[in-house]
Image 1 (cartoon, helix red, strand yellow):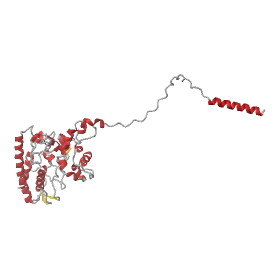
Image 2 (cartoon, rainbow, N blue to C red):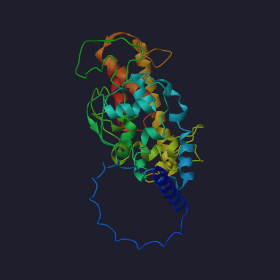
Image 3 (cartoon, helix red, strand yellow):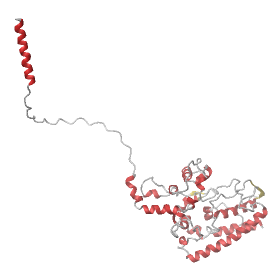
Image 4 (cartoon, rainbow, N blue to C red):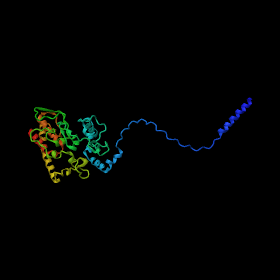
Length: 356
């Protein structure tokens, strides 16, 4: 009996294996069922950051690379590039002598840079233009075109595009201060560099009442340049159409070539070249003579170093110090009257009269 049951089970197992070892052909695919209903909407993801206009806009400014290269070529012949003063990178100097310091000072509104500039650059394209901020034509905008506070007088001046220039082309307040014209008594100078520190061009152009000079006496007025060129001032003449390739004008900012030839292209609206040259020659000769007369008086007093345009520390009368200040102010202007002939002439005449 047990043997019979065993054989029945064995036969069932073998039969099952035979069925498992045989596989028939794959049948045809059945009909696709209906699409089920959509699932619920997932939650929204976080907003991504806004992209920047960048490389896709390059051609807006760089469509004519020759033009940009021409401006750089001109700048390479400028005193801003060649002058070497970018090495004056400590905080009190860097604000005007370096590109980084200038932008720092404009951002803070101070008279000096926040700190010493570690890797100073000369005044360059990025100093004056807002390059690569919007990647549009707006990048040619000036970095500082607002009206400017004159340090010496705390008055506000607005010379249009030349506001960019007079941010630095104005003298700082000298260490020993400026004597008041109604002051009396003695005045002590402690430095061999007393007087307006360079950059007097902007305030000389502005002239009467705002220049910060020692306006002793009467008769002060400004030349027509101060009124007629007020919209762009420095830019009108110093960035006039180019002369001799890149010898003067344009982004060289030069008014004269290295050989001393003047660029009269900025004068053409009001003067012929011959007329302009005559005016400049006569004005500078007159101012030079008066300036040397004043220098002789100051040397006689002992306040002006006979070997250089430097002060001799000591105690002098207030008038003597004020007249010395006017002398240095005119020397530092460097135009010998061209920037503001009437004002320069009166400063000299009144200072000479006060000392004689």
